Length: 510
Image (cartoon, rainbow, N blue to C red; front, side, top):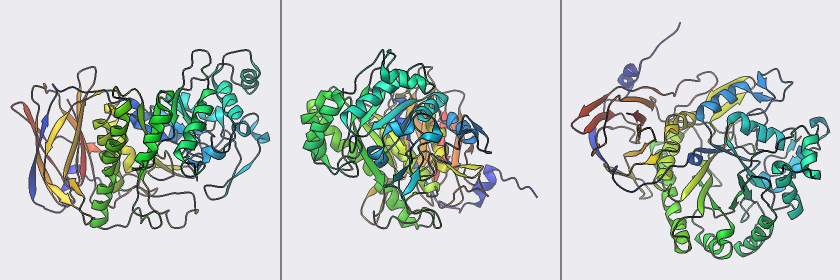
């Protein structure tokens, strides 16, 4: 028996609750900046089944594939319009030796992935497989090189192998391995978390190493590298101070990592949590705003023109691994709570897009806050995937400042979060997009959006919500959480009025 549930019927299933009001004032005349498309970047590490089984099954797999890449995952990722993909780590990057991942796959040496579960890595997915994937997805590659256990020569050779058009031994080795034309590799991360798994270094020591290693990462032909230095974790402002003082203009970008995690020793279930847990999560998630402000203030002292970008190249929610999965593979489910972590974080990045030029959610498939989950020949889209798909319209558009007046929620830890969040942008064709999130679990809001001169016609919208905040998609129920059409917008005098239900995310276009 097939049951069809309309959005109206879904809302009827939700608890009848009090309605409050929120007011949004768009400020289209204020100075603004472009929301670089790379803010919607992604991350694929050799970790668990992110690569093997998630992205790559090999050309001989019975799972439908294109040159070894899963067709279902390829199609899903193309719909996201992924702008940039970071690889091979993460912690894995600083034990990865690129020569092990080139040449005939059956001859490539195996290694032990000591960071993530002691898994045997067969290196069947290496440089060619990654860069060819980026071409299939039409996205920029972001390669993290091995500064922790690698040599200067090794890194220099890798850059030449990938990007040199010359008649040189390394370029010819690439040709022998099946690739005549050099790849375009723009983003190069010089190490990863060098304060931790990448070497447990002091910032002064890493700064000197960066200067040395980066010197030998050269531009070949017309390829121009955008070099990213290892930045801090969370609020480690001292690390940023040292990087700006000792590296400065020698880097194009400085990374920062921030995870929404409850406790590193007891992270909590991805699917079983209380309302208090949920609000705590959003309070923690919004700390990324303060993290960016803290490091931006330091960068502004010596770089007031913001020539050095801040790159949030690892972020997302981190929960306990799902029961019954492989320890160290970081497989976790993904609920409506995670959708809010994604939506609110992206809104923060928009507000700081004058300094933040890239962000890479962790990770693409089957690991942490993933876009897709796979099992054998099945694939499911997560609530986080749907947020990225709904928000992709902001890529490359100009941020529209706004003022939001709404009520607040105070968490048990005395963190104050808004009930209604919003962001807006206008693209070069003059199309405006407004994304809204009502984080309240039990209250709908009548939202009035004052356009303040922005013209409005041909309004359309979509909404992402579910009966319970703990709802998620799995292989037996792949569409529990998915966006549907939203038509409840009234056009007033130079304003829009709509009711946003509890625990829902709305995307408007006009």
